[in-house]
Length: 225
Image (cartoon, rainbow, N blue to C red; front, side, top):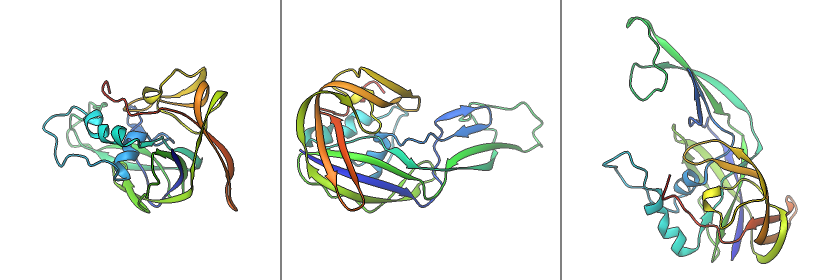
């Protein structure tokens, strides 16, 4: 198995509504692995959907067969910016203000600012090449992807802390302890401690030095999302 360590740097404001509190729409500082997988072009999304039912499991099944898995991205450094936008009187907003039809209503979006940097990992059976530029988020923000290192991994057994953020639906076993990050389409977990088989790789380069531990056997399980 191969481990690819990637850093993602935003070049635009990134927005997706992780939480909606009245007229405030907040973007979480983690990037979900389902959306990240689509953005990397590892799986093709349909041109159009005949229904509003997610097709994650159908689309991601091919990667399970190929032995490719992308973890969620956790922040290395980040900052936020607030933007004001005009809210139309339409049904897709959870908050519908009761006002005169002649009065404009404004909402606030908390977006991740440019130069925010994130880290994610790709597990694959063979060496993989990823695009240098991608777009993601509701406004299709431009982001740069840099491959920091790519190396083979060893499978070890034992207890330890796992790097980065994980999708609990994709884990082969339950973590011992973790913190929950509530976001759609499925909550993520961080600060994870697990006991069992895991991949381990020691990375020593000029600009990067770390021991990476990730659970072995992670696969996309999005049938109930």
